[in-house]
Image (cartoon, rainbow, N blue to C red; front, side, top):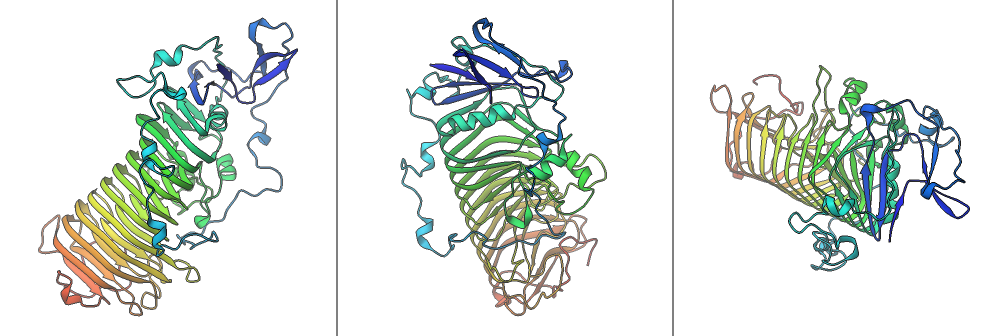
Length: 540
């Protein structure tokens, strides 16, 4: 049995179901068993002024009555409840807090690295396709693997109503779809444009497949709402527009899904301020286990494109991200992704243009594998920042970056730490190609402040750079300054070919406080000062 539903839309008058259309809502939600299908039907090109709410009867019910006016400009619709503070302060720099949640795993515990057996409840193997013949997928199109338009349109007595309003909002129907089908179900967002004017806190999901075939556009005329209402993600006061969490979650875009964050509005509002308060991350995987995100394109993200926090066994593949400023303002803090307090993360087949780190691995991350990524105008592959709070040590280990291309970027393969506590160990950068990179290899124990560089107790060890080739913008191939109090050790270099793009001789390798420096596989040409910046302004 199929039933058409609207968010908060079913009323009963004399036992007859009615459809309630609220101004600002424009998508259609149809539920078929355990499958929820959302279709955008707004026509913004013909948008009229906001009208009163109207009740449209099914079967021409004579008892249908208007339910009153709702003024969309009412500020209470976009404000948090009185007394509730959604604002989380952010420092100007980038401090990174350690373990904030009690009982979180320690990366050294081998039990936590065991992978679920294929086919088990915790295995990603459950996701690629639901069982043939299941109620949720019995009308699959055999050629494409996705539900055909013909089948989706064959609805029994489903009434389609198109609303016209100045500011359509498809969020209520999407939220209702997750409410109805977010556990042991399937959610399908059909082709079209969805207008997102509200935060989406999609947690407590379980065994759900999400198919996105359309474009989601986040509103930019209510930035104060987003700054107040976006849920917190703990890390350095960050907030997010979408928080996705639960167990056994697959989100697929099939190369059709597009997330448009209207990022230029946020770039202009921040006006160059670092970590502008309340600027939301586009999508956060939050306390997620066995999560797949595949085939999505981002354009003009609000802040970071994605964030993985307090999560395990997350796979993110075939993603395309592009955020840049169309004016003189900087597009900083538009990282492709960052991991934090997470493990067993796979990132592959990405293309990223952004104004900050392409891929960042932050504190208490372990078993992260990154491969086949192309980064433009970014910081490319980054460990850090870590170690900002000496009272809460950060641990990073077992990280691989493989087959990476960096073009016109600040760095290519680098590690940035604060003078705190913890360790970074067993990290491999291999098969890294780049063009016109400011300082390709960079390691610092005192990022941003350049103070207390030699007193840091954070240990950096067992780091390998292999097959690193390309051109540097200036005459420095590597700048490495480790703490004198905790010297780096176990550094290995193999097949390093870095040349200044304008010629002028071999690029310099600057090194300080590295144990067994003579056995690294590369000759240091001079010391690296603690004040060595991340980005150079010329030859040294």
